[in-house]
Image (cartoon, rainbow, N blue to C red):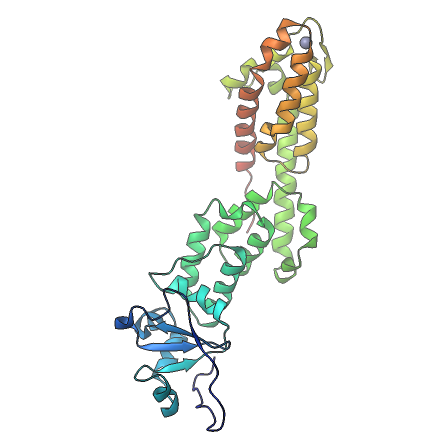
Length: 317
Ligand SMILES: [Zn+2]
């Protein structure tokens, strides 16, 4: 950004310019009173009052005298050069302008935050933070990067959401993300602690006799779990007594997976459920075949309960 734009040299040919995409293409000329020219030659048709309202840096910029040549070059509308590239400015202005539809991709948000910070747009940064906190879908992928963003820009609510979503991925994978070098060591330790606490809680939960024997007084719906144990043909001795081998294997497999990724959705993993149902169906006993239809409801309830258990663990910020 050059606060006092210099007119081009007389013998320098003006740089080719193009118009920005909607809503910054000047279609609503009635409200346009300034043009921002990016370093890659794109003109953004903007409104001074709107930008001044959210940015003291823009407010100062608009009060500085403009070069006469710059003014002439664009007719009556003053044109101000900024150092930023057009894609960065587009993402930033999309948050400032009520007509804008901000992109929620990781790169777009990261770019908008970087430039909102640069232009002192505190209200815009708060707006981005609030939007992220309320966007359950956003942090399903790139959770570790979203966590780094949340920490860097001090969005504690979003940091908790991103950390919770990151449970679906082994925290050990985080070491490969260079973004995380930019956040304090304590924030990394907190995320590791959170993951390991959740893993411990779920291991204890899945191994607890209440699930196997159906004596969980807090969960009536899991009471029928021991029903899975009754097969006169294929029973074998499990951790807490006799059960069907396919139920023991289901719980063992779930235990292994959630020891790395303690999320309830692993209980209803399609592959695991299909395999378990096929095995139940292969047993000659009518008991096991009858039990087959109960596997999915049991798994769904277990999914919900696993997530309720990890919801009790809080991330330190
Ligand atoms: Zn059986």
